[in-house]
Amino acid sequence: MDISFGIHTDTIRVVIFKKNIGSIVAFAEIHFVNDAKKVIFKVKGFTIKLKQFKRANEPMLCVDFPAYPSKRGYMKSFILEDIEHWKFFNKAILNAYAQESGGVDASELKDYEDVKPEKI
Image 1: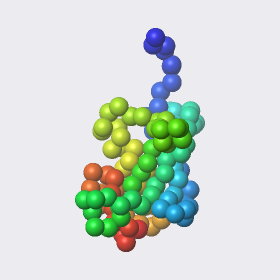
Image 2: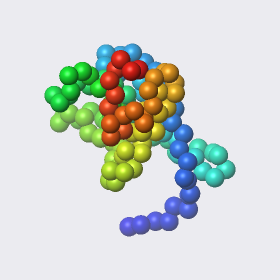
Image 3: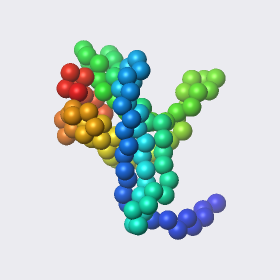
Image 4: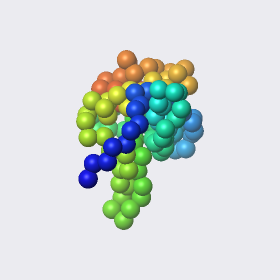
């Protein structure tokens, strides 16, 4: 059943919390902002971490979307059906992290998700 929500937002604000916990370098939140510049809702729990992929010689910087533990591992709790939206949020989070850390920006990233850690 579809219900009219009546809220318009076309702006997000990304908030970064830098941490060093194992491979985690930061946590992020996305705040959805309305036309009056008020936060309507927040999505918390994005993780920015270094990951090692088989296709890469060195670890890469990646964004993991929020998830919760279950008996079958971690289940994503924030799902974007459209890949372009997913890329947009990835890019926004990595740009915010770069701004906070003085590191790279998303224009240097391949597919908006990976960067070599020495560029941080």
